[in-house]
Image (cartoon, rainbow, N blue to C red; front, top):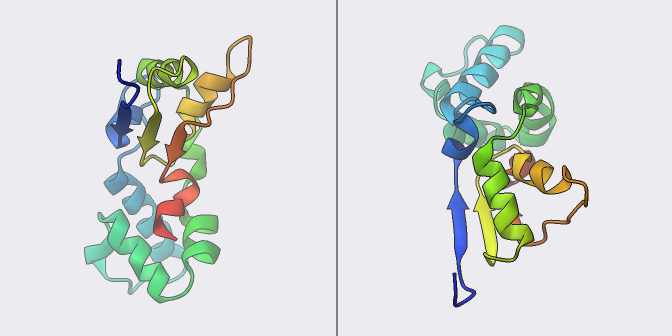
Length: 138
């Protein structure tokens, strides 16, 4: 930190803590799978149900990742919950420039919401969100 080279890496565990309590990747995969099986293809391979990466790859293979998976199956409303203290801590580190960057594999934007939520709104340029809006699958 003192050398100005600290990067924080975080994954789904950050957003699973209360009050955020976001679903895990396997839970999101299950929600997407169940909706797809119910409304579009009852014969989809059941082995895909609990594996978000494999499920996304399935839609890549069908050339429907964006049109079906991202735009219709991902339950985006599940990611609209309050940030937790971990999100606030990372936002504080980024605003204070205590860290060079924070890398998140999460779909949510709760770290950014913490940075934007104060009296003074800060842009979080140091934050690299790998999973935001399912960009990691593209």
